[in-house]
Image (cartoon, rainbow, N blue to C red):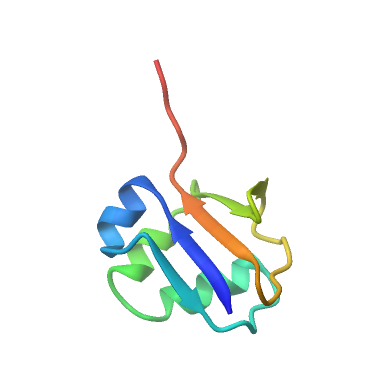
Length: 81
């Protein structure tokens, strides 16, 4: 299983902070596609190209591989001031 975590506005849009997802995705891009295939609100929330992602608490891009037991986090860009 993959532990998938959602932060900030994603958590609000999806109505959950985390889910367990069956292992099987090769990379984060594929995992994102599988999640989007669940329909709305998943498709619109995760289709954003400006989302940041992390694998096992390390920032990465969507080409990063995914393995059973990984923690994948998605979050919107952080702004400050």
